[in-house]
Image (cartoon, rainbow, N blue to C red; front, side, top):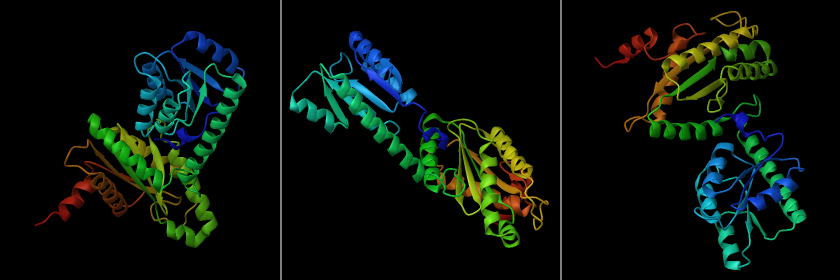
Length: 322
């Protein structure tokens, strides 16, 4: 998960699901004037697929449809952690309180009875879009590091857990890179904490320029330490990203007179990659990446250590029981 994916769109996306084309025509004709993006589906199955791929900001969902009805679509949406927060507004011809209660109990936020009043529909739709926008902003704040504006430890923990399970299900590689600013305490002591904060912010920005896929994540792990989660990324590709990160930070050319690795701010990186199986654990992969970070520091800093490196092999041999 990329933190940028949490930022609201310029115009909210509304998905309309209704099996009657004439209803869709009316809605499209009147809603296209609103400041929204609009997409439509004629079946529950199609609507669910579009919700999974597009992640709309609001779903207008007809209840009575052949095949998968609106109740079942809503149930499946709310059962998926990545879709559960999308507000669902039911469009229903039923005036039975039991049916309306059923829809609300499944997680719908509101309903509009057919034949509906377009002004009322627009008002309710805009109210729920405004609430969704505020909810997204709060969620983004809760997952953002206040200083560096990258993902925080909370978002890292949640992302790492979900990506681990995904990699396990699909037997895909998962890579972690742990990054630490070299001799950061010395930097703070010489240049002051204000410069130290600016340094961390610039380092975080440089690290983020090295990842481009929506699923990749850079997070502040704590203090001067960062971590990158790289789903479906093997050893060679992860090493290339790690080396880009090292070079990007060095390329900032932030003076650091007390850095034994080089005269500018540098980072050391530990890399670990695994295809999770029943014997592997997220904690073990993180511990391996962390161990390799310290091996990079022991080898002189301003470098990356990962699978197969001489530093890793040598220090593991020294630590092996005799």
